Length: 475
Image 1 (cartoon, rainbow, N blue to C red):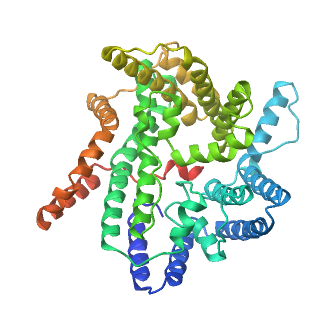
Image 2 (cartoon, rainbow, N blue to C red; image 1 turned 180 degrees about the vertical axis):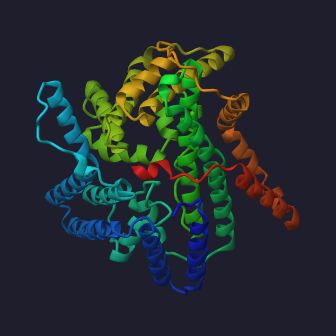
């Protein structure tokens, strides 16, 4: 089930109805857990076997760590989890790389074959693995001391709004809320519905439409000239933003309906003026996880300047690899790491204008340079191969041409893309204005409010694209 499919709304209505009949917290927890497992099983029931084994075995490790805080226990848990995740996600990539290296060295008969490793990735395995590892690391560090029951552990891992694509949460952000689940509240349902609707509009009206444009342009990159190459990357940049931020908002809205608050995962990332700001605004919970559990574990900024830069680079490269088993993701992470390192090195030497006009010019220039870097890195995130990625980058720079005529792009497509870019840049102001107007909106007659809601739904139905799978379901 996808949050934007009609069958999901049937599931949600049934779950809310049964949840609303519960009278105690344990009953609500059991109903929510059962609903979460049904939601996960709707994708492929066989993956429940892996989930049950992983969650149950890790609870044993968690219980042992709670009693002893043993480093040996933590290391065993980390090795087993990362070996399972690595074997499922990266074994095929490693074999393919070995075959390519052997072929480059002139050895074509290696006896290696990776076709048997190209299995479908279990939905959400990276996310629920990260959730379990974060708890165990927090317990070892002494940052989480509250005992988690087996039921709460299961619900923390499998809570359906965030399980398959985040936000990535620490136990301190969710477990206590799940252990005091209350009855349904009208205000929570209303606020949750509004947040969910905003995410749904992002997904159906924007992400799915830009997905069609991106697929069309990326289908044959050899036809792209400079302008259409930039349009292709812009279409994907808008698609992935609306797709993932839309999913996150739908997840936050769904959780709020049950009285659970999830943290924001996006804060208008395309207004960023530096790499640090971008990662404070994009996929915030992943950035925080990588910082707290990888960067800090490597030594953070405690071991000298050169080591700090190396830790930044290692963190971002591994963060890129986490997104997928392809060298394009490694390069994507490397480029973001290089951007962070270069900015940290150069920043102290950059001039700091004092005049207002100079400050504005500096901010615009910093934003423009930042977005160029982000757009170039998206090429490697979207490309099917490193060859294709470098080819598109060359076309964006005007360094590659083609005898074939570029794809015909109608004027209204350029206009809609430009208007959408403006919308993204002004999104923070629009959201603030809407939030300030909620009190006045609540005083509008129900008939008029119903008409506006109906018009919004009609707009989504008429202009929405075909329902697409969420991009981050593949990670």
